[in-house]
Picture (cartoon, rainbow, N blue to C red):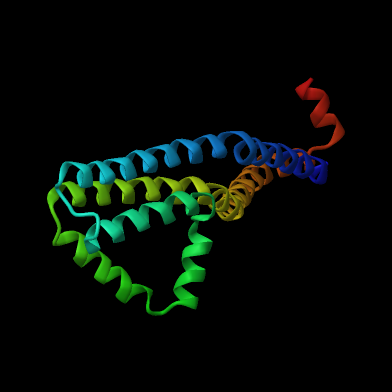
Length: 178
């Protein structure tokens, strides 16, 4: 019976993961890509307006970074971040240089950069959601099972104190109760 319930629950979870991965997540990713396209267009607008130069390091960096973000949205999750940190130890130095370059630029560029980081944070959460669920369910089930075991122990102790006297009764005592 327990195995049947487990199979049923896992079936529903699999269906939920499939719905999320096949329908919901692609829609979220597409919306985030559109937001990044808009931010890239704003960056280009700053060049057209003359706020920044097209050949400046800030524009090249921000524009390139937005292009990479647009391309990387489907794969941007905690597993990728962990893999990149292990493979490329110089990443932290490059990130610090990148942040310094953006911080020294005009406020419009800083705003575009911060908005792009918000978009990527949402992408990270959306892409890692299933992993979070997969890792949190076993932990939740362990906590729940321990709680059920404690509740079972309490119920058993209460039942023992109530049921044992009943088993000590004799037949004639039971006829009295009826």
